[in-house]
Length: 206
View 1: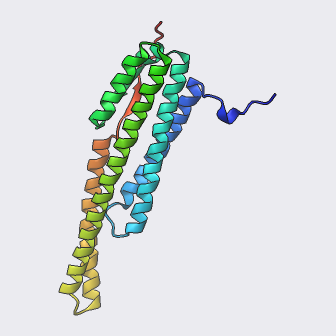
View 2 (view 1 turned 90 degrees about the vertical axis):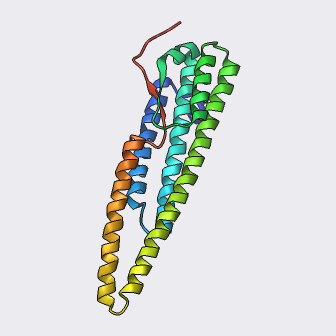
View 3 (view 1 turned 135 degrees about the horizontal axis):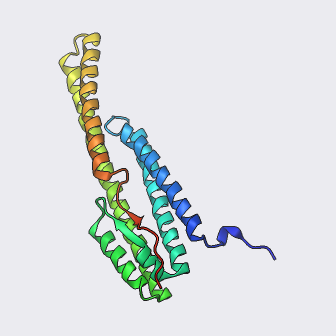
């Protein structure tokens, strides 16, 4: 009799590794997205934002899969092993996470499964709201850059070379603003666009 390994549940160590890999992909796609934000190529920005969003959703699923692996071992042990590291998460995510940790302590697997699903839903909802906000910011930024370029061209339209120099100056100014925005975002987000269940020193309970 063969076993379908694709359906086999992940052990805790395997799930933790998968989460770490997903985390790395989020950082990679976020860096690419932040690099292109602030330009006027809406299509390229949208693609980069979509790649980043998909990576975050995959990371969320990896976090939930790791939590599920822990719960299969022992929900009580998992509750005392895990801790939340906040970096700007939503209140709904906070509430869902804390409720999940408390329910884990009951060792009621049905309740634990439901609480874990509610936590995932809160994370996905938060991510969708964040992506929508970023999309609105990108559209506003692209429109502002285009307007500045158009105004510069109109002012110095008597000579193509002069217009080109003006566009370069506007672009350079906008590039400085974009880099400042990236630095602020990276400081605020601490490398991730939300929050991650961190890991406390390993301790067995129960």
